[in-house]
Length: 129
Length: 129
Length: 129
Image (cartoon, rainbow over all chains, first blue to last red; front, side):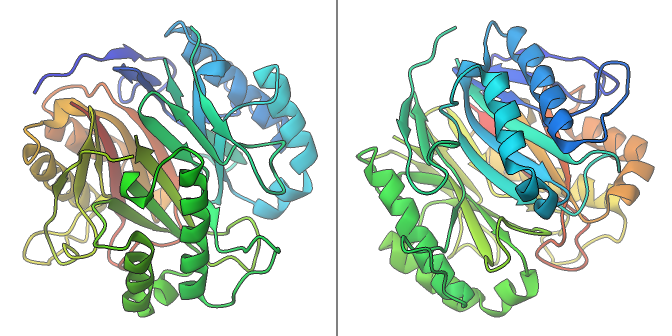
């Protein structure tokens, strides 16, 4: 059974994984982290959230979509206590990224590790087009 | 690209996240935990499962849906050994919540932490309408 | 609100969970692990990846689908360092399973535990038909 996909690749793992795949009205994004294009990562979890959402918006743009198209988020954090302590600032950065109160579900999970030790958060999104 | 969403918010984080978002025929739910409306949480993982499913059913009802609409579950548990030891009772509570043998996929993951230390399980569901 | 599902069950947990559920054009798969049908599990993470993809392909086949139908993957690993050390071999095994460079998004998460202690990786997929 064949499936028509629209695919976007970028970054250091472009040969291995896609950053976004659309099939039908569903758009899946690979988990995005707070690493800038130059490979640097801010120390602060709040700044990592801001960079991660900038990366998410870049992927969405390749599909003609915006943050409004996101329906579901999974927040993967390496330190739930740190995330809860910074909850207000994290959600302020999130609202800034969305430009308004997001109509989005969210699940927050404390993970054992992310891809690189400097990463404090990874955000996995599903969008609808 | 605009997207039409149906959104349900409730609980202490209603200003931050939605508990359910429907776009097209897909309905995403935020991970639901075993905390009752009065803020109390049973100690036992099996009772937490029962409360979590009651919360899931409440969200579904806002979309005119029932447990039958669920297609996929992720079980996030803080102690896999405890979950496996109570497997029979957990799945009995689950079958009770569904009212029949559920036609649902499931992935069980041992997480490092959930939002609050008293939580032993969080259930993230996707439904189809 | 009723929903039409196509359901596939197999294996030791067939009475409890489905291995695949299709609703509309979306096909959800339960997380698949590197355990062979005879219950044995290879020690090596790369071999576990190969077995897990064989299990995924078996589930897809029940829906008339192939690896091409997969749109999104979550890699759940118990040891991120081990996964990163074996990255090249893991992705070679993955490309072998797909038969070509996969047009698939991926999120890699370090988990605290999987269902059984011998499991090093679990792969959760969403497909589109």
